[in-house]
Length: 272
Image (cartoon, rainbow, N blue to C red; front, side):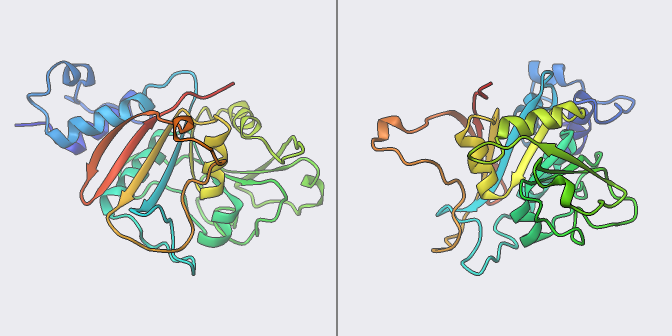
């Protein structure tokens, strides 16, 4: 009997140190040597997620879901759901594999995300809200008081931290240095690493992911493309303009089918 995707997922969790290997659990090394006894979808998942699971010196991955024409929502802001079930399950797997999932304050205001692992087995990550000007409402998820809430970090500019009210019990507020262009992604990564969050998923929104990409702060980027045309609305990645196509970024990437969606797994090189 071929090894199924659920068994392979438990092996990936164990390889990441995020789960306990069950008796008779899959040996990932053996799978990589011989794929004959593993379901093709499970083998592709291992190929895609194992680099994240086994990253040892810190790892920052961005994830963005969009339409075929590069939109993340309509003009009115409706984004539920651009991508399908398989893409959402993939996102929850990414959450389970990282120490921390980071979103910008705009995503908190617009979507009130829970940022927990619900569609697969695995632990919840630490949740982090990037809020340089301290404008996130303290009564919306993930900053709002809630029972059994996962630990949450509120990352704010150092100049505004003293004027903010005390956070909820599950929230820890961290100051960030501020420069002429605001808070730098490298300082965000350093602040997270200082509190033990070395594997980071930058989940949203588009402005936050675009800045991390543009400033060389990502090791990997997962772009999930849905087979629909929205026509207008907010764009996904928005990067500084270039004059010639020969100056365009052409990173190494692989494609994976997630039901009707397509995952582009983009390998980047984070700059210090």
